[in-house]
Image 1 (tube, rainbow, N blue to C red):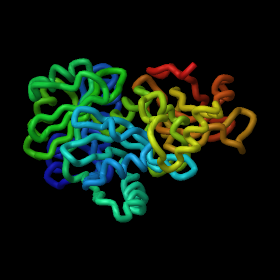
Image 2 (image 1 turned 180 degrees about the vertical axis):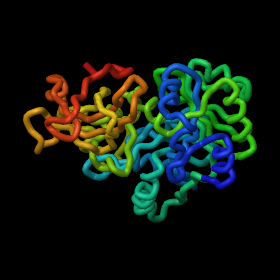
Image 3 (image 1 turned 90 degrees about the horizontal axis):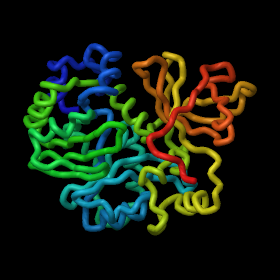
Image 4 (image 1 turned 90 degrees about the vertical axis):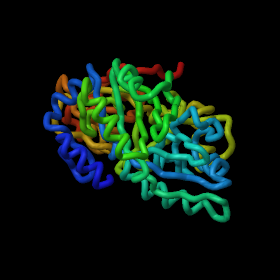
Length: 347
């Protein structure tokens, strides 16, 4: 995070944990208003990788789970980067500005993803670099989000995955229970103006509140702690337009395709609640009430919920999930109670 932007946020009341914003003084209230009102959040917990060069499109097409040819100046997509065994090293939202592709993903996975991608550049005309400092990143959510953004941009993305550009602002619409947007702004001055504009009728919130919105939208994140734990279908990536089964080869493609066409999926991601305020973390295990040795699931992400306890996304054995016997941490840990995702599973 640029020191000038960090100073701006500190003056606005931000409380920091490392370079991420923990909250703006009242995390409980922030989570509550995130589910009902207009909120905006600094997204410095998400980093950005830039990919450019004459062979950038072909290179990314050969590495990622989705069809990169469909990423244009007006559309973005989720895409996974897998090991040869089909396990996800990283999960990113890919968008394009001019001839440069940008990969938005959790900050703590950037170095590992960059290192692996660089191994396969070889003689291709491709440059990869951490471009997180190129943008101020702001998330906006709420029924009034479009109206507020309309005061600073003449055109807005109407549907999830769409993107529009105005000057030095690129605005993505992302899926959510309520309208949600991500703004990427290259000018600190204009980032400050947007923040101040949103601050008139909206409320700033920290990282936890924004991640709660991601969880309730049923959108997975892959952090360093959960890297290489899941195949794309385990986190429902095929249900949120994150996998193409018609494109060419990429690392792990045979395993991903076999799981899809042979019906071998035994685990999938569920939304649920647990009645505990003890923070759960990505990668934490879940067990049945009769066995504390063999894990039957892993946490994708979990955040405190304003109604009490935590909301979480977890990859679970399908048979166990249907029986409703999932406990966090041990066989006697708090019970996970399933809730409906905002999208259906396949028939």
